[in-house]
Length: 114
Image (cartoon, rainbow, N blue to C red; front, side, top):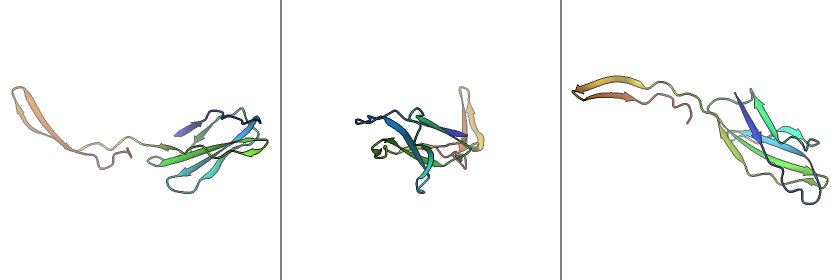
């Protein structure tokens, strides 16, 4: 399971962009630096492989760097990793008529997170 985060190059405001830093937070935890591309202006994406868990939300923010310093953070992007739900419960036939059949079931115990 993986998440790909990508961004567009912002306005340099007079000095060329020299790199980016990407931060991630799991659920409501603190943000941590997960990609330090301080000297990689050409890389504008990061793939997180095996660092994400099912049924959790992840928050991302990125900043740009130029010769003057670091920009403000981008707006926060949120991603949610859902999985397939459990099967519906108590599926059963309730009645039939010449042109219809009635069925009944209860929702699954776990909705997969979405």
